[in-house]
Image (cartoon, rainbow, N blue to C red):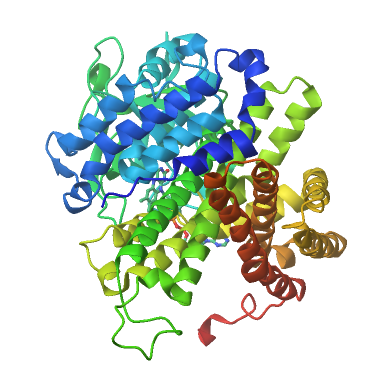
Length: 609
Ligand SMILES: Cc1cc2nc3c(=O)[nH]c(=O)nc-3n(C[C@H](O)[C@H](O)[C@H](O)COP(=O)(O)OP(=O)(O)OC[C@H]3O[C@@H](n4cnc5c(N)ncnc54)[C@H](O)[C@@H]3O)c2cc1C
């Protein structure tokens, strides 16, 4: 039996009953939208995901992109899917109408992207990168740059990339060595010639679209002719594969493909810039147009990086979600053994494995991880909408600050626990789950990328504790604590969930205490050595709040909901209970370790490893 890629009832609950995106429709930015237009967009995304993305899920895993002298070739089915996505207007949907888009709220845009990711995460990567690339150019580019390089991407005619990493510089972009030498100016702005290598570039070359717009970080030489050290030396350039005005092929070529564990449908490339394979305007050097000022490359690029971090969290959540749906279905069809109550009666037929307590435990954990992760990412989408459209300036500011605080969690928590959910989905399938005949092993391999790219979990922990909390002396966190307290107080009026208010408050009080300790200590190196376990604790406490807030919406809605809806709401409340009983207590253990400021690992001499 075919399993739908996700539970639309749940998505509708999150968008309409929990996040109340209907409140956005009265604002000028989203005035053209209504429940009907959002539903139509989600229906469209579901149709494309089912007809164009899902059918080559396994094929594109088994048949990787190929490289020959003409460049990289993807499967025709991948090309078709990208074209169908563009023709349906999904590339442009999240952009303002003035830029050729549909003014779709970010919450709904992410939901529709998530549907594609659930069906085939690697093919959805083309849209995710293109959307972020075009939005960056639309925000920071000149009119000519927007018309030449963003507009074709918004229309889905071309795709985009982000070229940050180099073979020797991944987590530490300060150490990139790609150089950009000034080369005059034309209608697209200050022009440069770039030389260097970019590693790990997703969609770095392909034949899914006729042109590719690379956004490349590189260093412009300072007055002494040498690159300025550190991130201050980084600038950002638009480097199209084919130059505008029919000026031909740019000097950016694919030097090799990386052969990945998962995510195989989208090519991942080593790109060489300026090696002289092509000679635009008669000479070697990749032509690049600077976006923004010299030295502003990284702060500008952060717009795309932050969007990609949310996209990574969403992809991880959707992989978990699909794995959960598949495991749930399998557990109702597979029979094995008897329950504890009937195990002595071998004459009775075997039961579906969903009758076994341990299988139920694994399914409930997946539900708590997958639905918790999706809810977290959609909440981030709602913050994007608030930051763009809230009538009050202070609300816009608060939403933007809170989004900044939560971005490391939105990226990391789904990546870590989505993977844990996929691990459990394999376990529910038993030996069959370990074979390639079932989808769950591929979902796991695809999801294994997510804790690595767009800033590893370790780097996100440092970002959360260092930049987002200690550097600003927990100012945004203080606002977030108010939001959490509101949920806890409201939850107390619902008998089914009132018991969870106190443990939520307790977990956050422990986090406050650790932060206060770190601030008083004033030793960032000692604090940051604890960044990853701190992120684990913080992330779990955030998701506990997300679960209680969802459970509150479910408790509220269930009071006058019809009978057939009751199991859905009861399932939400039970998943919340699971999170509070089985997961939230882990916060105490993580924080106890963090608070010790233990140097057991950090001070370990290398010769003891
Ligand atoms: C499939 C795939 C797709 C990708 N797509 C793109 C893309 O489109 N564009 C792009 O620019 N890049 C892309 N990347 C690159 C990705 O962002 C990097 O792999 C990632 O940032 C890590 O860099 P690295 O691989 O060099 O690992 P390293 O930076 O060498 O890190 C190795 C380990 O050391 C840890 N570490 C490093 N520095 C620190 C530190 N200061 N403190 C604590 N721990 C640290 C890391 O957490 C990690 O565990 C992609 C990578 C992959 C695998």
